[in-house]
Amino acid sequence: MEKALRIILLVLLFGTLVLVRAFEDSLFYDPLLNFFKSDSDQKPLPEMDTFALQANIAFRFLINTLISLAIIFVIFRERGIVKLSAVLYAWLFAILFLAFSFIIFTSEEVGTHMLLFYVRRFLIQPILLLVLLPAFYFQKKN
Image 1 (cartoon, one colour):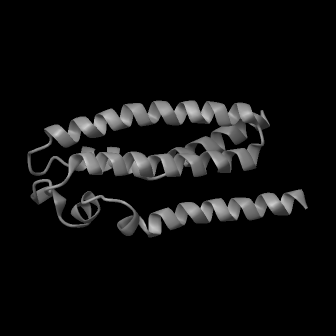
Image 2 (tube, helix red, strand yellow):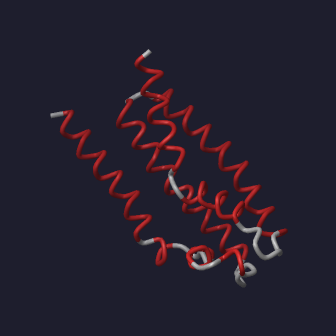
């Protein structure tokens, strides 16, 4: 029974991550979503409310982090792994959010937006989860 419950919880948590991604247009203020879907190399950054963008990026990171930490807990059932993951997420957020803010405020040239694209992508997608799950699995196996 416990295994079935864990599988159901994992499906629900991964489904929640998918829903966050599916409804990103309506849930979060992010004018860069449409900007990067177009030919962004040939355009300047769009007009945007920088504070609202930063707040929404941070909020989305927080949502993805909480769901990711729940997934890690359900899979490994160890508080130490969850605490280490939380510390890693906090450091990643601090570094990437500072980089994102710096790039947003200093990026004015046309054709130099790929760094912004990738830093933003790490903030809004649960990429660290894809790194941590196999890392903790192999660590626990050895």
